[in-house]
Image (tube, rainbow, N blue to C red; front, side, top):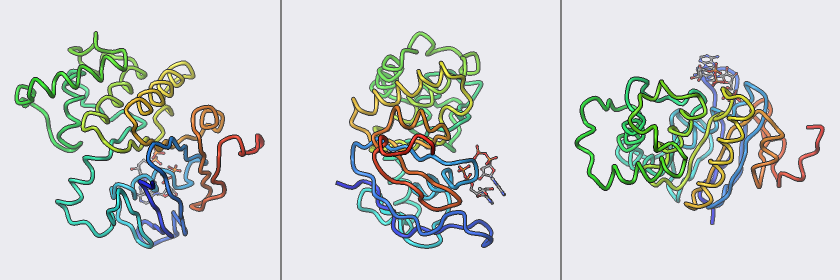
Length: 239
Ligand code: ADP
Ligand code: ADP
């Protein structure tokens, strides 16, 4: 069953040149898909169209049978609870603890968390600990997250993205700021935890090798258009 359906999507910023042109693809429930392409290809914009962080100019995005472009504010907020986001620069609140950052995912990313930690239920806190444990960082739960390494911070980012039990996680260059070892750890966790929890995953990457190693399917973007879409093993090694 398809969870995301993108139909003839077009997007430009400031009505200048098109950043995305005539993009169509579907992602099925449970798939682990990498989107690859050079910087500026439109990967980030494509992810942002899926949860409508940017407005859709042409075509359609259907997520979980909802026409994303036509939702009102309330419907959009509800839809976004089913979409976890993971960012290149983690986007954590640096002075708050790890556990608070994970619980922050319950509030939507723009809400301030100061002073509301005690309002979370025990069940919510237990769920946050469960995720930290899965990601091997439960010992750091009460540390300020800016005391953690980059790789550990991204694990906090993964836990935060999963706290609402989303149907999908959209990962925008999750390892672009990490060294090769930490990158491998993050990709391993991302793959195993989304498989275990049966969550669909779309990951923007610029490293072809990593995409090939981890994903079932690769979508290649170049200058706003799809230049490849197929099983990872079919992507020629000279791409
Ligand atoms: P990628 O993620 O593949 O690096 P992006 O989606 O970030 O690609 O960017 C695609 C193109 O859109 C680039 O030329 C970029 O400069 C432009 N772009 C991205 N965000 C904006 C924005 N907010 N305003 C104007 N142009 C933008
Ligand atoms: P990244 O590759 O991590 O997205 P960028 O430097 O491409 O980093 O983009 C950083 C921010 O600037 C993003 O929010 C993006 O939308 C915005 N941006 C990128 N290109 C442009 C542009 N040409 N004009 C305005 N904003 C842009």
